[in-house]
Amino acid sequence: MSTLRFFPALLQAADPNLPPVSGMVFFIATILKILIIFTIYMIGIAMLTLAERKISAWIQDRHGPNRVGKGWLQPAADGLKNFMKEETMPEGVNKPLFVLAPLLSFIPALTAWCVIPFGAPLPTRWGRIDMVVADLPVGFLFILALTSLGVYGIVLAGWSSNNKYALLGGLRSSAQMISYEISMGMSTIPVLLLAGNVSLNTIINQQAWGGWNVVNLTVAFFIFMVSAFAETNRLPFDLPEAESELIAGYHTEYSAMKFSLFFIAEYGGMVTASALMATLFFGGWDVPFTARDNIGPYSGWLTLLSIGIMLAKMLFFIFLFMWIRWTLPRFRYDQLMSLGWKFMLPLSLVYIVLIAAVMLGLSAAGIEPGLMYAAILGSMNLGLVIVLFAILDRGRIISPAYGRMHPREIERMRQLDRRRSMTATRAGEAGR
Image (tube, rainbow, N blue to C red; front, side, top):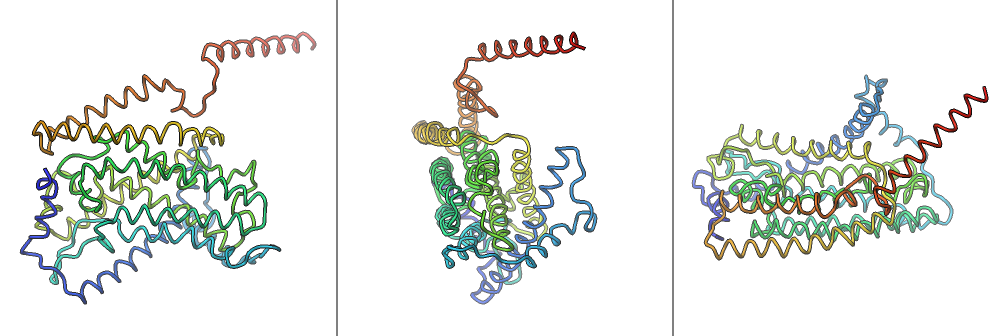
């Protein structure tokens, strides 16, 4: 099983037509990839602010930004405004931590991109250049370790501001991110079990030969997606920034570019989470219906196509983030914590044991990874989804809002409210 699982990676390493690049070529290519990714990343985040405004306007049936360059220059106008605004330093703040906190929020989301592969290898006259800044053997563990540092920026922002609302927002965020970070990490263990490795390129190659993990590990994808919403503090999990309760949460006392860095960090985390979901569960940059992007011979047009496929998958999840924000209401804080500890964490633990048992059973039966292997896993996950969401849940948890009352009692109260409204209306008409 292990030989078949790593077969694509072995063929890549043994391709005689693409010798390894020299040290100088590797260094220059790495510098170029860093500059290109950083530039596209920052420009993309700026344009995402415009995209969110346009999507919210579309959902709410209004125009959105349309004055500055017909809306396209609105991010540039916002950036110029933030650069020119006065920096305020409230009395009693811890100045070093107050300045450092926005950077601690933004840097982990940006740095995580250095190990995420975004395209098929590019053949050049100097050898094969991998479309990833640093192809670490422990790339996925690196991402988990690095992105978990983002909570420190939010907590330090709340504590160093010397403001009770900011402190409450920071405490809420630390509890929320730590709670869902455990579920997020647990949900990826079945992915690592199937791939047999923590390298992201190996996970992509495994999906190219065994089917997308969203089919084989549907419940794990659901847990990861919900945890990603909570980790990025996006609706319906934006409790740390609850305007109705905490003014603006942990960044209440911030202004100008330091205030803007928190929003850049939020959109950066959203982009990174979208790239991870596309990589772990939707095949990443893999081009369907061909194996040339996995085992060669490689080509420039195939690399461009794989980058376009990865970008399209990311844009889908980014749109999903924005769509959910302008569609669902905010959870209560007790619902947030209850969902994380009483539902997501036990479900992820049970799912790990179940997937491991199924994989051991298939291995004992002599079924190797392939179409039959994927069909069995997919059928099992379809049954789990039906049992979990349609039979066990019955709308109590997976719904925009829920209460403890029986549905019949809720319907009875609605009918009573309708009768009272009709009585009041008739009384008003009789009084006229």
